[in-house]
Image (tube, rainbow, N blue to C red; front, side):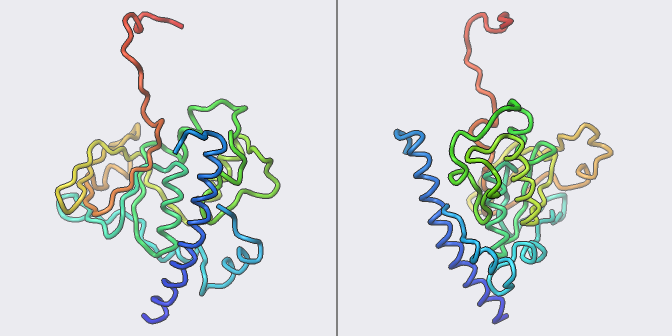
Amino acid sequence: VGERVELGVVVLIISVDREMDHHFTEIEGKMAHEPLAHSSTFSDETKDKMEHDSLVYSPRSIARATTTGIPVGDQGVAVLRGPLIVGAGPAGLACAALLTMLYIPYVLLERDVCVASMWHRRTYRRLCLHLPKRYCQLPLMPFPHSYPTYPVRQQFLAYLDEYKRNHGIRPFFNMEVVSAKYDGEYWCVRTKDTSNNAEESMMSLCTREYRTRWLIVATGENAEPVVPEIKGIRNFKG
């Protein structure tokens, strides 16, 4: 027990220091791009130490010790010991990685069949990041040095897939949140299976309701289309 607590303190200190650096770096990049709106990376030496010294941090070993399964209780209700994350885009993956680092169990739900579905389905092939990569990298893992300053769409998707694999993140796909209500103590979150073959899907056997003290909404600002009500818009063919 003593060793586990000591490890948690070391990890927490690293997390706070590095995340403050990353936070201010991200703000700096956004202000440079959009001044009216409102991480630094690890050195190679620090990164190597963290990867090989189990007393500091190892994302894969911590992932193995983190409960990311769905604990189904009586009447199909899951009472979670940690946060529930909705959305497996960049924000959801970053939250999952940091929770993993701190040994905090979580459940990550995604209504699509892949991570970063917006980047997979609603972007054109020649798209690239509109900010330099150092402002867009996720916590604990910088972009590869071989990537250009402005990574293209496929490079960003490959980076996210590697980020998920490297941190042992296992989202539950085809799970769409239909409601979330707070009862004063718990968030009561109801979901539905969005797979085409829901009756045969393994997910159809899983719980449809979760209870958690902490709900993280990481669905992004463009998850749902917003179409203005304009007279005659339904007859407009483009």
